Each structure stands twice: as structure tokens, then as C-alpha cells.
Figure 1: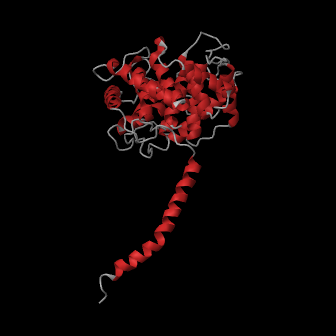
Figure 2 (figure 1 turned 90 degrees about the vertical axis):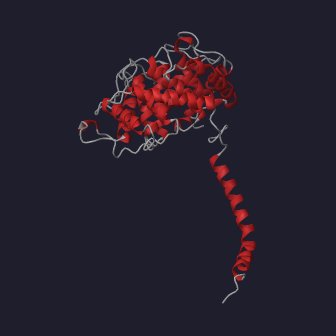
Figure 3 (figure 1 turned 180 degrees about the vertical axis):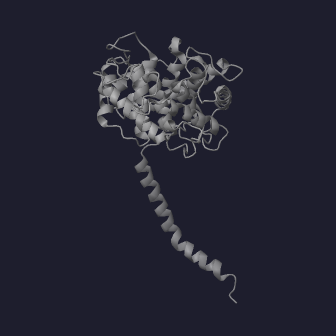
Length: 362
């Protein structure tokens, strides 16, 4: 019988020979991965989410879940496909498992509602390209995350039983077709419009960029035309016009944030217009668009995070302090866009603390 000491001795000799090699290989792998991935965003995913954020977010999701209608939408004036898309993203961005978590039924009902509202032939999600853009963004963020093999049941209308991917491809095709009709290269309320504005164009453009990020084909020409439109609407000082050229309707933090976000996600940070728009919003961290505060916060959070993390940190800390006393007892937020969208947009402004949505990656 072998002495029990032989195996440990053999293992020790083996490890003494291989440990240097393994250490060298691991170090080389770390360098390769680091080079391949590029510079990691700061702050990185995994940092602790502030307690105030978690509490506000949880209460907000509880409110949205309780007020969702049986058909998957919401009942207030902005509870259509676009508002439903924003609410859906609020649930997806919290990190809760969308397939088996506590809000999985809410997520599926919201997706069924959005897809059921879509025109099966044109891909248009009514009642405006605003709604279409936000709904398309939600579909893109859900695509590949939500298992839709059992999304529909036998009682569902057969015409509506599209997968998330099929609905997203249709929505992208509609946006591209709409842009081809538009001499400005942007979008307006109607898919057949021949004028454009930076607010609607921002909603559609971010949806298209999210779809492209999810693997759906979006031609470079489409992105380039829209980026050129935003560049033409951005002044040297960073203010962004609404429609009809630079200076239309005065300065707006929301519009400058939209342009900054579009340039950043489209990977056009080389543009002078990007730098001027980012400089404009970074220099006004205490400012807000009073009339559409939650709308502005939604875009400003993403734009600052994409462009200037240190500025975002400062702005985010102030946002948490500002929103905490504004949340109602039922978890909702009161705003000009109705409780569903106001609550969803405020939550999404806070969602950069979680950074689970692909569109929130830097």
C-alpha cells in the first residue's frame, strides 16, 4: 500500500512547476482582455446603489405595477404605447429578473400591449412618432432579455402574436421609411411628416440606436442623416433649436441633452457640436426646464453619464436630494406628463445608478 504522503508530494512538485506558468498566462489574459474591452466606464457596474435611490425606485415600481391595466397599458392620458414603453424600461432597468422576478407578469403584459398596438403591415406604433420612438426603445431593451416563447396565449389575437424581435424589426423599418420621406433627415409627429423637430427626432433616434445595439440592421446612412440634422440644429454655444433652425424656441437643457445623447450613442463624440452641447449642459448642473422637468431629467441623466461622469456624479447626488421629497406617498411623481410618464421618467433618471439597460452602457 502506498504511503498517503506520496500524493501530496507529487501534487506539490506539479504545482511548483506550473504555478509560474499559470500566473504568467493569467496576467497576459488580463492584459489582452483589458486592451480588447478598452477603458471601463467610471463608475463601474457593481458599485452599491444609494439607499435613497433603492427606496424611491422600489416605491415607484410598486405604484406602476398597481396602476397597470389588465391590457398592459396605463389609464392616464400618456399611458399609450410610448408611456407603456417608458414604464416597461423602468422595470427592466432595476435588475429584477424580467422572466421570473416579481414583476415578470407586468413586463409581459406591457410587451403584449405595445406589440398589439403596432400596425402589422407598416410597423407604426401610434399615436405619434413620439410614442413610436419610446415604444421602439423599450422593445430594443427587452429584446434578448425577455424570453418571449410564452409571451402570447391561445386567447390572443393571432394578428398580434409577433415576437419581440419581429415587432422591433417592423418598428425600425417604419422609422427608416418615415425618414426617407423627410427632407430634414429627422422625424416629426406623423410618420409621413415633411418637417422635423429635435424632440421627436431624439425619441426615434435613440430607439434606432438601441435597436442597432441589439443586433437589428440599421443602415449607416440613416444614422448619418439624423446626426447631420442634429448637428445643423446645434449652435456653437451648445444650445439646440427645436425646429426651423438654430435658435428656435430659445434655449433648452432638454434639447441640448438630447443632442448630446444622440451624438454620444451614435459614436460621434468627435463632432464640435457634441462638445459644445455637452459643455452647455455640464455648465448648468443646477438648471432645469421647469415646464417639462421630468422630461429634461430623463435625458440630462443619460447625456451627462455618456459625456462627463464626474459631472453626472455631482448632478446625480443633487437629483437624489431633489426627488426624495417630491415622491408621493403612493410612490408616484406628479408632473406635467401625467403620473405614469412622470413617474417612469423620474425613475429612469435615477436608473443610471443601476445601469442594467444596454442603452445605459458607456
